[in-house]
Amino acid sequence: GCSGSAEEPDTAATPAQTAAESPSESPDESPDESPSDSPEDQADVEITISGDTIKPNGKRMTASVGEPVILAISSDRAAELHVHSTPEQVVDVKKGKSTVELTVEAPGIVDVEEHDTGLVILQLEVR
Image (cartoon, rainbow, N blue to C red):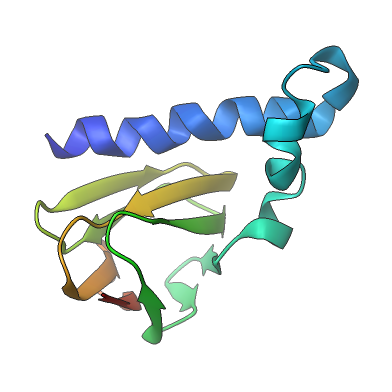
């Protein structure tokens, strides 16, 4: 269950990254992909993982049920994010830059935690 959810955002990020690198190769997709041309510019949250230092740390933000929250992640190591939603989600983060979409299907407060350090990066107040 969770691993399938974690893989889908990675798959979605790959075409966006490809479109950003060479938007002229797929003119039919350019209008749809234009928000992803600069993932950091379109991200709801920018996350930086540098060793055991993670920013933001405990940031609280609102989100809507069923609407994606876009995370732009820059990491100097592989990491695993635990999204304490119903159902729970696990996001594998690769070293380097990546963009991930989280979608929460039930209202409430949802912690997004980095597994190795146990730090809560985000608290999503889902309405």
